[in-house]
Length: 165
Image (cartoon, rainbow, N blue to C red; front, side, top):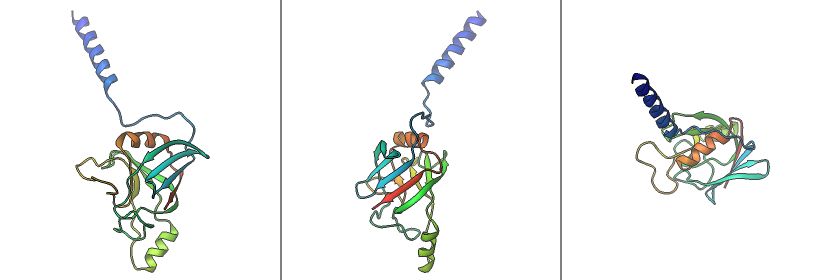
């Protein structure tokens, strides 16, 4: 009788663990070789060379027009950068970092006597209640949590990202 109970418990635990979902997905498709962000259209494209693999609606910084210049300006950068880090424990579900600021960004901010800011990410929705409406981030790019799970799995560190006006 003990063996039957034990086996029933093992089957129950295995069944429940199969139902659980993880925010960490796997991706076995073509390599994402670049990301293109069209700020004016609020669209982001993941490409394998010149072929679009996926596209997403995005939300930007609270002051979406123009290139990010200073810490706290609420703008999303423009230019070419790289994905340089990832945060599986982000306050915004999951996030991948953009290599802003580069040397040019530092020089422009220093010339004005200001900090260029930093910590620009592609991320999901906030874990705490905030971030409502369009263009609510402090300069990042936001997608849904489900989309962020896809992006997190598909995009590797070192991938080029071009952010266009």
